[in-house]
Amino acid sequence: MKRFLLSAALGIAALVAHWPGAHADEGLKCMSAEDIQGQAEVGSVRHGGRSLRLDGADAALFLDYLNNRIGDPTDYKADTLIVGLYPDLGYVLVAFIVDGCADQRALVRLDPSSFVRAYRAARGVPA
Image (cartoon, rainbow, N blue to C red; front, top):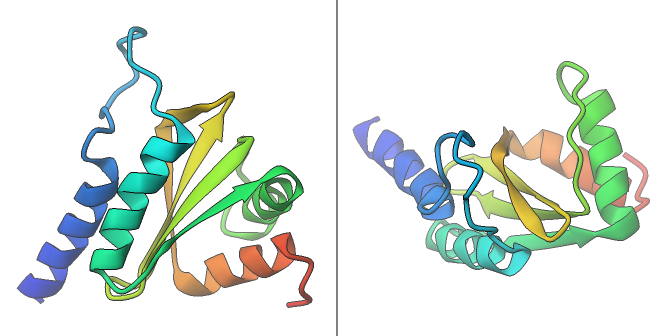
């Protein structure tokens, strides 16, 4: 159990190593989609996964499914989504890119089955 918890902590730390905990400082530097995708790639590969990028209609359809069909209704917004798959840890992390910058207040952790349902919806594949 300790090993699992340590692995989970390392997986999250790999993606959010430079992610500020609060958005109180308006002078935060913009983290681009490429920056976030690079962090997701390093962390996810370490845990047997990979990163994905969803833009345009794919991102909109994924967000529609996430906002309206997974858990409580939400209002996540983004132009681009960076997804880190962490199969060894049993979850998926989704980062939101708005106007070219990472939304540093939001990072969503999904269970794999919820991710698969939203991803299939984004790709137009029936559930």
